[in-house]
Image 1 (cartoon, rainbow, N blue to C red):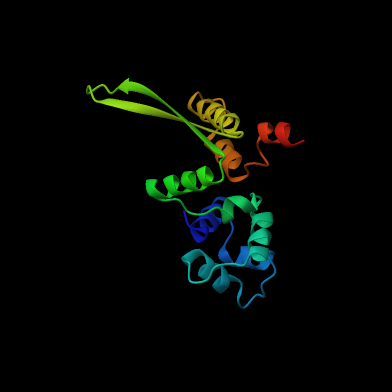
Image 2: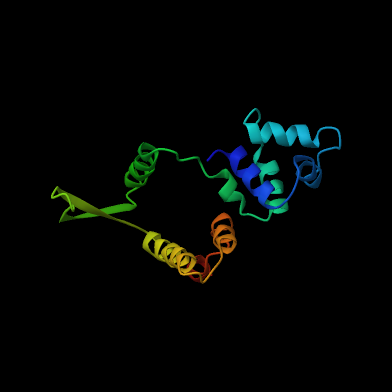
Length: 157
């Protein structure tokens, strides 16, 4: 998802107008809504300092807004290839058969802390499915990660 789409989605969830958000981050009354509309449409890309202000006002982690849009499987593979170049990625394979009878390999990726973070995410998703947390709580956990991550705090404190 592009940064403008993320800003708009969160702004709408927060019941803010483009003008409200623009004013809150310091734009003047004449240009606040226009500038936010430009960011949301992708006509302009906000500078990092502006993104940080937007994140503060919207109460989300700025890294969530700045994370690259990964819309295709190929982009995920390219990110993994990059991590492999840094010698941070380990891979293992095990054979399995699909319900249709096709023989494939299940690939296990190992990356520092990845399993820990994925386990925490899995538990959050299961809690949502089991009705233990609301869709809103789950969404807030995602847009504020890693600040909302208990595992991240354990590892880096």
